[in-house]
Image 1 (spheres, rainbow, N blue to C red):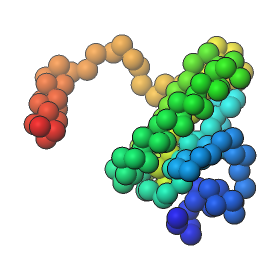
Image 2 (cartoon, helix red, strand yellow):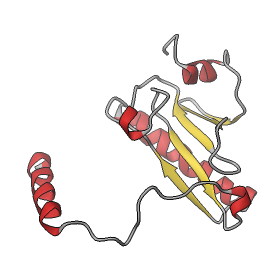
Image 3 (tube, rainbow, N blue to C red):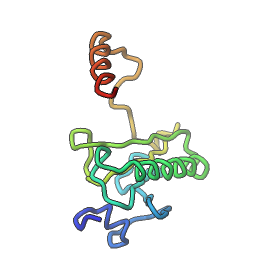
Image 4 (cartoon, helix red, strand yellow):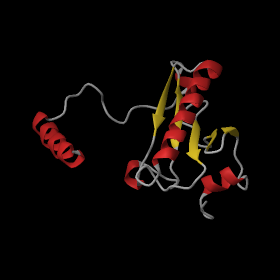
Length: 142
């Protein structure tokens, strides 16, 4: 745990939070700056800075807890859908540097849901750029 990390404080019980579930490896709690009604965060109890830092076993456990929480927001809160979001790095909107997954319930009723997409799905990308970047990534991953 990091002494200066607010999420480590929440896990340890020294920082306030509305916890909804926890197990040996993970903790889920309400986001204090929610994008929609019922927005939660799921964190590994062991501190990892971000997606590039988290051990695979903690990542898997966090994803499993996020799925359980997502199921609960649909069943219990009546969400019409759910977004899972991870922000990795300050330029990707990460503000707390302890790996976390946002579980964001989505509602047809927009009075419960203030989230909107920051890009336009369905707008095709440049085919040459897709081929070039895809080729570079495929080579790096092989």
